Length: 183
Image (tube, rainbow, N blue to C red; front, top):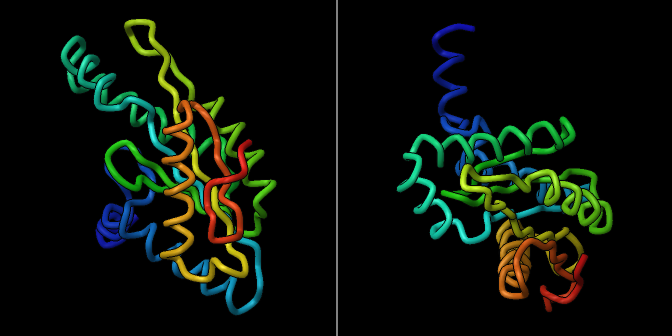
C-alpha cells in the first residue's frame, strides 16, 4: 500500500473502530438512495446506539481507564464488521452511535438482521454489567426518497426503541408515521 493509499484510507475510516466515518457514511447513503430512486433497488438503514452510554462508560472510564472504554467501542465495531455482509456499509456515525447501510435489503430482512446484530453486540463490562444496544431500521419507499428522510426515519425509530425500554429493534413504517412496527 502506497503512502497516498494509506492517507486516503485514513480519511475514510474511523481510527478507533476501523469502520467508515461520518463523512463517508453520508456520501455512501446518498449514492445508495440515488440508486434506489433511479433503479428501484431495495435499501435499508440501521442506526445503532449503545444504551446508557454516558452513565456506563463514565463508570468504566473512572474505574478502568479510558483505554477500556475505547476497547469496548472498538470491539463493537469489529463485531459489526464480522456479522455484516460484505455489501453492507458499516460506519461510526458519532461517539457511541453506529450506522449500517443495507443495499438490496427490504424492511423485513433488515429487521431480522438487526435483531441478530443486537444479540451479537451484547457484551460484558469488566464490572459484570451488560452492554446493550438499541436499533432503529428504515427502508426506502414511496415516502422515503432522500437520504435525509431515510436517516431521519431510522433515527426516529432508534429513539423510539430507547424510549420504549432499550435493548430492542424498532422498524419505521414506510408511511410518514415512522415509529409503529416493532421487532
